[in-house]
Length: 307
Image (tube, rainbow, N blue to C red; front, side, top):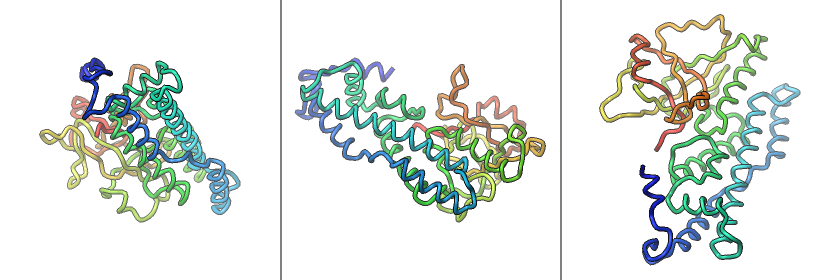
């Protein structure tokens, strides 16, 4: 409803001025500000060479699955950055009258002026409910993780919210463990364990198998850190951040789910659509209550909070 009301606001004339500035002047300043903060596309070829050297140092003749995920993530990231740079520069030309204003540029201008994420950027990025300002802050944090990953190797704790396709990283973790222990890939699964680490900074080293992950939020319940199990929500707390979690690939025959609730993990609070898009995997959360209670409460984990 609010989005529709914003669209009805006047775009030109005296009613569209803000502090004496016209809509075009505001957009020119905004595009300049965003362009000045945008990072350069990452050098994928240089990173590939470095990852190959790192794989050889570890005794592998080929890139490991998690290294392939890094290169795939960088490729998607560079496409997003390229679209953002080109669209902003074209909008500046259209605002100055050098080129005509197309429908795509008009949508870009309206979204930027209203503080919303433009559709041309949204379709190149992971699903999100954030507004433009929060999305840009999230965007720069993702860039920081990619740079650190490329420079120092796989992080001790992976920020799952910062990945373009988090499912591919989980699949890569399973492949790495299956190769290590000669397990059949089709007979492997993933279990999760909630650790006592509240922040990634507390972690000193990576686990032998799997990975520590952060950036997950819980809806419909909360995590009781003292009892280390699910607990009912507190009043006025609709969403809370989870401690660091440990994703552990294991053989399906060895999985024993006792006193746990298989919690779906979604990208956003929109959860998944009719085609199942949006569901990433299912996490194991300890509970001292029957799992039907949490099913009725619609308990789920999400990666991208609205904040």
